[in-house]
Image (tube, rainbow, N blue to C red; front, side, top):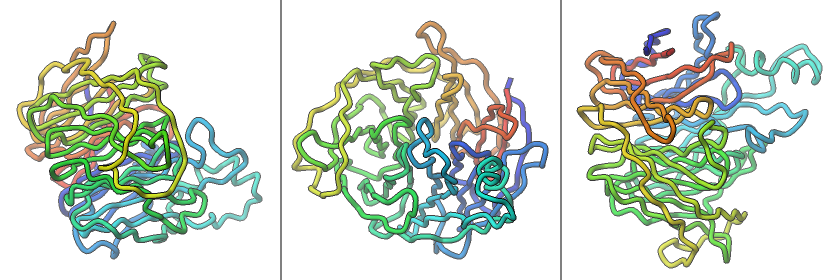
Length: 381
């Protein structure tokens, strides 16, 4: 069963995207009303609004992504107050980066570190514009941070993926270290692997493309093309290594499409990571390719385009949403994917544009959806 926990009228226009913080009970939203909003995932406090980010973008805010902790979720810096930060991408072709100042608390450093979850999610914190990133020539469709927070990827209607490098502790400057021109049409989504520097993009050209750094230098190149969908690929997500079904030697990814299918892809190719900043066009690079195969097509449930997908690192379940306002939850049992539950009319007659798994302040896992009706709905199972 999928049960509605709460429904938040977050925006006056379409809610395009929702993102959750990796370690704090926060979600951020993006909307056609040119704003982003941040809410605390606390049922006890009735999911309060923490901040409204506005007066920066001139057109719809299409995408949001929280920066993960410095060093990554698995290896965060010890005794370090990691202030939350957020990137938002807009149809005005720019990216805004927001963050909070040091908390204005009458506590010493040890007390702040001990209570940082409560302090960093307080509505008294002021969220400030830290940077505006320019470079794309058309609407930005998605942004996403890598697992350690030093790389930000963006994609656009201009058919390119850009990778930006920054100091994750200061976020003072963003340098473009690679521009990837491998897709033939509008790019709908970019997503990083949650545990390694592997990037995927999804496109109107019906493909997913995989990127990593070259073995012979520091640039990024396309190392895999996932062909099989018969329509626009709207979204893809990698499996987290903490998924109970994950296999250390295998990388898996799920993608969703206009063709009404969700597909699982896998590769056992070795991943080699490098650091670097020198740009060379990906179209002239040579690199070792990853071999990918289509592992499964999930049981059909949607009647119209599937726009978004999320893969739970806690349970290994997959959730999909789309233009039919349907939520579908899949579970893998002995290598076979089955539909566990569905929810019809999850946003009434409105399309659902985005879905994520998130964690409340009490530790329970929820599903969060964003719809054309401007609502952010939070669901339990």
